[in-house]
Image (cartoon, rainbow, N blue to C red; front, side, top):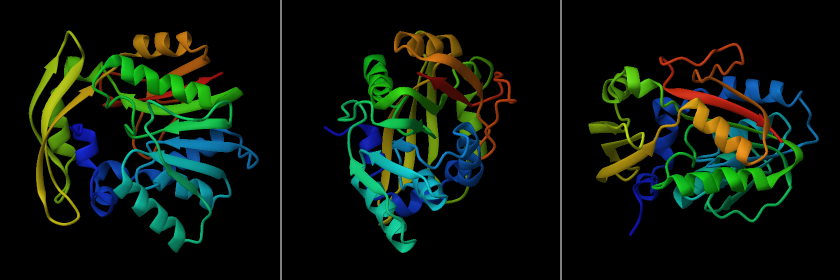
Length: 253
């Protein structure tokens, strides 16, 4: 049986690019460039690359990028976009819980809940971090965003999601946040690129900063920084608060 995140992204390549959460690419890539000191000699792995928006923008700027995703329809869209822009990017289908890469990349990015933290168990989410760590060279760096567990302690996730939704986007209902597991269960309503309507039971894990720090230390990361993640405007000056729906995590090996 397919998991909700597999069903959600089937035949969703065109719609995905119009989602409100997918609009911050340029600013996010500006930040990534700064973090790697504009070094064009490095190799970048984009885990959960979706339709390739960060991979494509970084490749346009002259970086060597490999994009991986579980969704064939999103990867097809990514390949189309790269072809249209005459960009050489390797896009491959992989499950982030089981990656073949070992010490190959200088930077790993996982942005906009590309894989982590969508998995159905904490162990699977940890496997993704483990695989990302394994893919890095000895002095490599990881930049990812994840759902901020401080947010639902102070706010309604349901209200936030409905306030961010634009016409034609996925909509959400029946949210319930479990304080024992820090998981939000909700019903997501989407219409795919062919007009098929779907109703999916979703389950996402929110993390608090101390958990993320501990998980990354377990994987021998150092210099772990956790910040607020403002779409399209990532910054190390953005202190994480309970107002941030997502957090930005930067960690070095």
